[in-house]
Length: 517
Image (cartoon, rainbow, N blue to C red; front, top):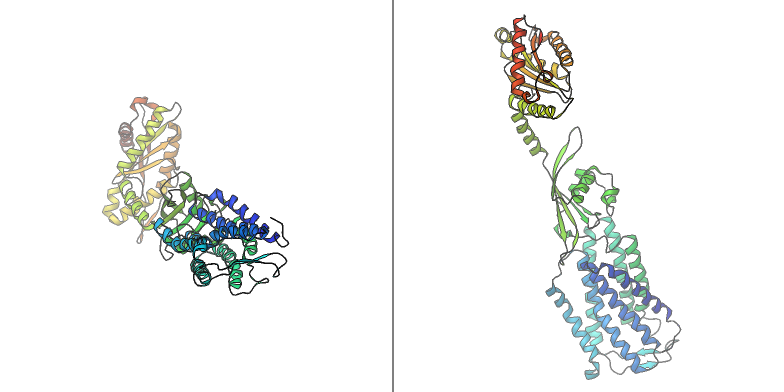
């Protein structure tokens, strides 16, 4: 073998293809990665052994390497088809793969058995006067012109059509990525077509292999610039863009690879976020989805917004390749705001008084008993239970009507709520009777709070129609500090507070009595 002038473009292309094969090995567990590896092997067979063909000096050696070249040449177009089909998310079964390989396999068999029938090559010979280096004239026969070349171009055309059709529906990042891949496909194909029609700087010499160096550089560019093979439009066939539900697809590294229009509108997700990991986005919804994926949960209820919050039932479904490898997630979110609102209303009805909105008797008992159990376990905590009863409330109903009575109870409740802390418990236990559990207060503090509430109630002037209604109330208090720990039950404390309330009524109403042992 001899180095021949002009070999450097082909050697460069071989080195690039070899580098891509080494790099592509890391993606061998991904379906698209397997086809990319197969494509690069085919390209290297063509480009690499073309270098040996040129460097050889004998006809027999050149023909030996030519046969190996055509192994890559024959399989290269179908490798492009496999690559594009997998890249665009179309199903590839073993049956389909074998069907696609039938014609290229027959073509390769005819080429390798040429010595028996000479359908592919007639009388190959070395030409010394056509270029600065010896050129092999293969003397192509009918099989090359009628079967081999048209078959390869048909496969390449199928790959181009599939890629272009998919590009139309892709998001911008994939359109750029796919556009460069399309360029890498078209460049050597164009040069090969020109060679087929006899348009070449040197007759009988195909420069398609040299152009593979440019295609290889393009593939390197999209591998690192667009993270091709790492950022693929996975599971696109499962996405229906006109669904009302939000659908977002993440790859195995939690990067956004597809956002349907509903998701963009509902959660204000920009297409520019494609390719970013969840953690790099500042989107409220995506941050909550990150929690869903990190904790490997399949479903989560997400609340978005503060004043007019919306609720979404979000589900994360793992996406597996046909080899069973995890390649990403499809996250769907359904707006359940109305359902949540109705559920909240039903839940509120079960725990709250329907007139005043404070806790009903049953829920007040549950919450208060829970707090008293906490106090039993604590050395320094204390609480007071207060019973409240409106003075002569029956007269309000009799004189002004039940509508006025309801208005009085509502305003009474609001007046008390405004002066309570968040952790105090306030409930209506029936009619005009209310009860309070004041957390973490001493007996003296509870008395001060109660007197302040009593004064506020007495100062109320409640307008009703053309009249003004005034009210007062009696308060009975009992502190946990006067009871033994094992005697701290809500029933017991309410009973004692009721005794104090009864005493307040005896003392002339609009007063407060603190129960003493």
